[in-house]
Amino acid sequence: MQVTGKIKLISATQTFGSNGFRKRELVVTTDEQYPQMILIEFIQDKCDLLDSYSVGKDVTVSINLRGREWVNPQGETKYFNSIQGWRIEAAQGSSAGAPPAFETTSAPIASENEPDDLPF
Image (cartoon, rainbow, N blue to C red; front, side, top):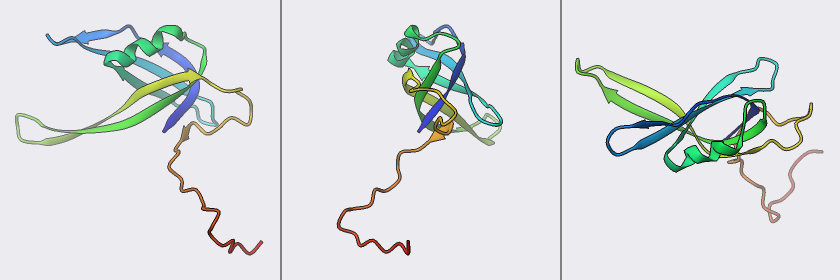
């Protein structure tokens, strides 16, 4: 999946724990009728991908949705979601005909051997 928009914020890299887990956050504002501020996490070696970008740049970020289950000390199960970025690139020709803010690329592609059964 992808998110396209303008960079609103790039945080500094944070390091956690004794093993040096790294995380960096990016906020992208989508360009649609009701703009959304989407928080995207970059972890470990992906943190460095943000070094060459700055606030105000139009970008397309490739993302994965992640979900986790956690049981608290009282025995209650909680669920958490996160959006993790794994690639970022300058947006291609940001214009009025820009692609939607979220785009999936898993649509099936018709085979050339399939009959054309459309009525038009």
